[in-house]
Length: 94
Length: 192
Image (cartoon, rainbow over all chains, first blue to last red):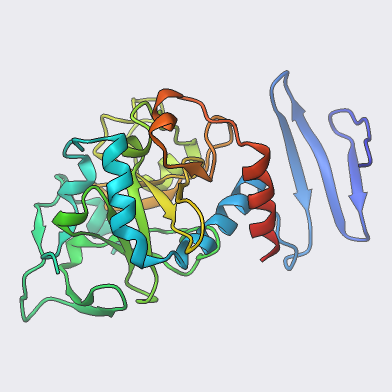
């Protein structure tokens, strides 16, 4: 990993057309300004993790839902009526 | 459309899934034909990461499968996420919603407490054919019943994992550090 020390107002260039400028710093956060071509995807790393996990979740094995329900009821035997339950379409059981 | 849904002042009534001829319907992989009312729809202005064009969803429940809530897309009708209320995965779950996502949800005041605002907080579940189920507590789906908006509110702290195992032990910890195994799993997923 390349490590570079920069001050506020300074920037680094990646390749020909990506520039990352240090806009603000505080003891806990750094504010970056990123200039990149439109076709370059810029994501917070946790968004990328969520994207990948979403993709995996979208092909979940629906045959295992009843196992999931059993497992979650071990964790929470008496699920209270949660706010979600007031805005759902309730379908009859199969 | 956004104006009309933003004008809704009170949470919608409980909807039953019985047939009504004039209601819009979608044909789904999971449930067959589902009838719904326009006010059942949750609008996700940004979609979800990886599914940016999926901007309208229904929450569907089957009583026998509670507390599972199905997040069914109205756009791509074979897309249906399996979710659990975050607090049934971890009873001590503390929701955080960043300013940007509060704006998407149309929350009144940026600083007011989250749980007071008619929000539902659902964790998307991964149910692999092989291996144990996990829930995404890093990026829960947050829904406002008042504005009918939804957003996947990905946290920027390291308090919860996107691959939280569903185990009774998980409820004892408010904090779940991603284990090296989870990290490598996430990396593997990133390669797919």
